[in-house]
Length: 196
Image (cartoon, rainbow, N blue to C red):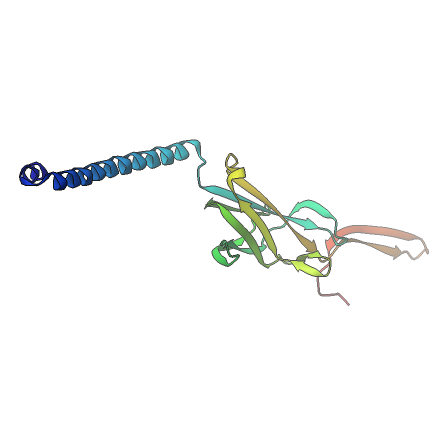
């Protein structure tokens, strides 16, 4: 009742100004309540649909053979960090280290829109970084934007170069009667150390 009692003794000009201020305050309260309700409703819809402003990314790490041919063989135990770039291109680490699992995958959830990249810290044993001409590829960029609004998961493909090839060995045995017999076709992985 404060405004009404005060307005009764005030001049016309003061009454008009006071009524305008009261109207602005009431209008502001109504607008803020409406916006808050819309935000609440939108967040609940996002939760229900599984989308909204939260996204996931899956990095798939595959092998390139010693000749540089891409395969679908997964590479596990490769190490990565995740960075997000701001509008000026300045990157901030947002997660890691992540290690590829037995399927060669890293899964990261609850990412917001923006520009990101996986930075490969170290490849798995027996592999080297992927190559682009003479340089090594260590950054794998991806973007989450409005074009992906209906697709909650982004896929990133990465490769590692295999260092050693599989090789076959065979052994020839010379018998006392000068006949020869082959035995033991064995598959094995070449390692860095060579046997004498």
